Image (cartoon, rainbow over all chains, first blue to last red; front, side, top):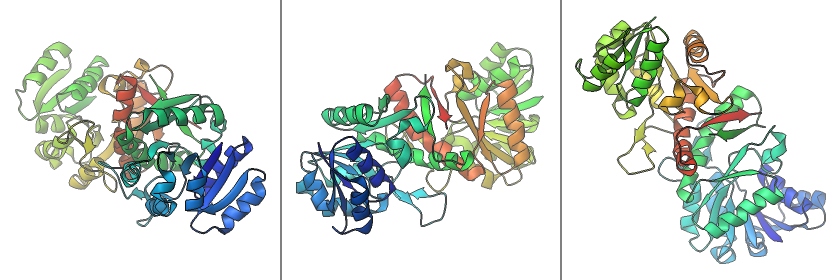
Length: 215
Length: 215
């Protein structure tokens, strides 16, 4: 499958690397087609890996992952181009973290809105699914880093898109428990959870953790 | 032990009832000393149970639980009186839920502030500990309603107060895993978690659930 991954940071490298290792063709998109981190990633990832601009990656992918930093996501997606994302599933992994007031970070969108909803509003013909933003980059593609079977969440307005992302989470990334939280407004829940996630990281002194919802 | 419980709703009744059943003397405080729900609770709870105004309950308790609805908490605590709460531990169980814009609720304080911090600011000589606000009223005092051993959180600025609340959570309420998230600003985390909690309640179709943090 051809997949576009927007962002060359830890999240982008982690997801793009996992997808290449599974045999997919992955184009990593950055602001510049010659982004050093993306070029380095392509060299290390090997067969199936390529890089380009945000627009190149968006046009390339049958499905696209938004792994850009939350503060830059809307700009990056504008550069990616609505026409390159039309009709496609966009998996939004970003969090609207604001580090400008020190740590722990606050959110620059929250409470009665979410980054995912802003992205959906900016790209009305794209099917946005929020997923994976509640765990760190390593755990996203390797749930076994956390003992036992913990949970990952999806939400979005298009049932078919959620089903496709759920299949990838289960069969490719190894998430056995995928909880569908409903429509895209539920991204307010998974994004706001970052407030708790950051405190838990501080208390546990590790980012390799996750929650299991028990009922 | 003499304990004040502010609020006569589900959370107040649940916590006050549990504490009476454990042999404590509990005064339930309401806006009026003759609040019908409080009077009914006292009749059903039996020996050790009494009711009065917010001020009566605050003066009575060696430790006080804020179980009022979040939207009314600051007013209720003003009526309780700073002098009646001076030097005492106040366990803040409330959530700043705003139902005025429909469901799911939003928060009327969030992101860079929390209800617990507002309460602490209003009562600088009281030792506020945020706890129990991440589970429903029944689970608060009966963690066994959720299978396995799930987690409950505490945060606050006074280590001794947190230790006292942690002891109550463990030994009286039966919470085996109490996670200390740090100072009271961590209440931003546990209060913001309500956004996710409400979506989980919708997805799971039950309020009897909780999370286990795995690492």
